[in-house]
Length: 467
Image (cartoon, rainbow, N blue to C red; front, side, top):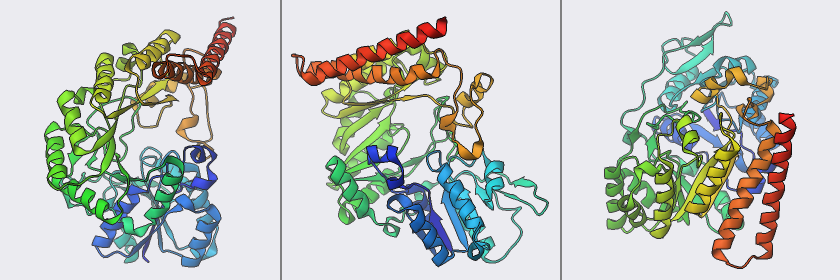
């Protein structure tokens, strides 16, 4: 082994994740593994998902990889820092070079280097890690010409090289090296907790939209897509090799190109690739014909971003979509027999209780099959992060916190929003249950009581803040 690829997601050491139990394979490092393998760099993947920190540390001590490349995001940041510190404190690992990549490193380069990382890979990683790994393995100490990396020179100065040009033809990338991990462990967990197995597939890189809260740290604000034929090839391979119950397309906006979607549908139908999938998209990239095409291609569930039921807040987010369009496309998807899901974000700057009420009304009218509600938080590198700098109410120790811990002055006090989450969830679920059953059930009554209790707490907090 020349390169170890890993991450820092430990399912059984994360209580929040154990409540959800929807682990996905680390697709990003499987792409890196396949690219290194194609270019004859020996590598292994240590998938931490079903492991423990102790088992991972034992593996490192026993195998002593010369290069340890770690994918880093908000969820895994603290575990990654802990891993760096462990490696740096082991005599047998003192020669190992630590490379970090992923969405959280781009705007935190100096911080991660100060924690002990040797190199930061920012942007797309395949070409960069290949060039960097070859340099390290050949004991070439000159890194100044490798685009897309940052490091410290002998004078402890942070050097950030030029960004690497994005891969224009993503069809040149090999399929992710799924054979490097035990896919069936994921299937077992999904089957046990959700009744069906799931896999992930990526068809595109980048997102051309400008939502202020969304990070584009790795792939940028771009749109590059694999050919419909190649994606169908991968779907066929997955079907024949693993035969999962469902596939989750991880793309930000699956229906950006209607022409591509039609070509993909034609490939799936002509080859009789019967593989159900779900995807995320925007309402403005949907219409009845597109939804029909999705269904013909095998889509059983589409997630349609809304984030709010208030047009004022949607505009403040720079979502560039009409709330009525979102509502109509959720209804249309259900009409055509596709399950519809949507995302809601509370606590965005400027949002009032009246805006939250509009969101509840929006969800009641559209009646999605699934919806998730979270409280907005600013990710470094986004427009939202910059906008709230003057109204931040927290100053956290960077190495012991994540961007999720950043709070700012919202319309109401911080303790208002847990109750707002409960209000939206319970009020909408109560309404949807009433639609299914005209008579008030015990479960429905409980939901209504929880909704009223949440509203009472919100009123009390708002009243005290006013006084």
